[in-house]
Length: 113
Length: 115
Image (tube, rainbow over all chains, first blue to last red; front, top):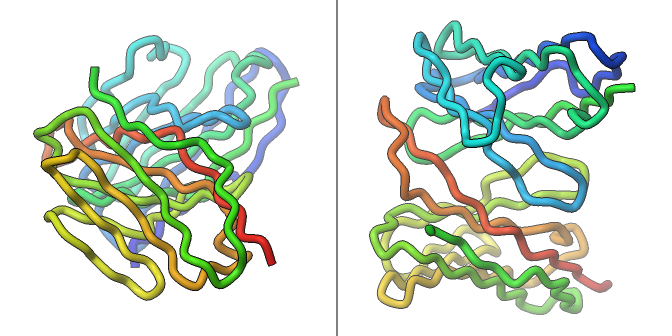
C-alpha cells in the first residue's frame, strides 16, 4: 500500500517553456501533498504544501507564480514550472499523506536546455 | 530555529555488522520521527516511524527514541551491501493545516556496507 506515482519520470525542455509534473496517490486519499526539490548532493528542500481544493502554501523564497500547484482531487496534484530556465533543472519529488507518514513519489528529473 | 542534525558520514561498516545511525533534534515538543532511505538518484523511501520512547523493531531495522535527550537512532543488523544508501532522519513539528504535518529533514548520513 501507500503508493505514489509521478509523471513524467524525466523531461528535457527548452528555456522559456513550461513543464507540468503530475503526482498521484494510487491506493489512498491524500489529504495533503508536498512538493520538494533536490539538487545534486544536497538535501530535500520543501517547496510547497498542497491541500485538496485550496491554495498551496509556498515556502519562503519559492516563487508561487513560477511554480504553479493545483491540487484538484484527493489523489492528484500537479506542479507546473512556468518559463523554465536552466537553473530550474533539478530533481522534483512529491509526497502524499493522509496522516503522519509521508510517502514519496519516484521523482521527476527536469533538465532545461 | 528548529533543526535536525545528522552526522553526514560516510559511515562504513563491513557486511554482516550492525550499522548505527544517529539523529538529534532541537524542538523538545516534537512527537513524530521517521527514517527514510534514499538511494543515489532515487526518491526517499520510508523505512521506519516511531512516536514513543523506546525501541521499535521491524525486521533488521530497529529505531530508538529518547525524547528526554532529543535523540533518535536507527540500527541496521546484519548489514548488506544493498543497505548502502543515504539515510534521512525526519521530524514533524509543524502543523500545516487540514490534519497534515510538515517534515523537517536532516541532511542525511551516507552508509557504505563493504562486502
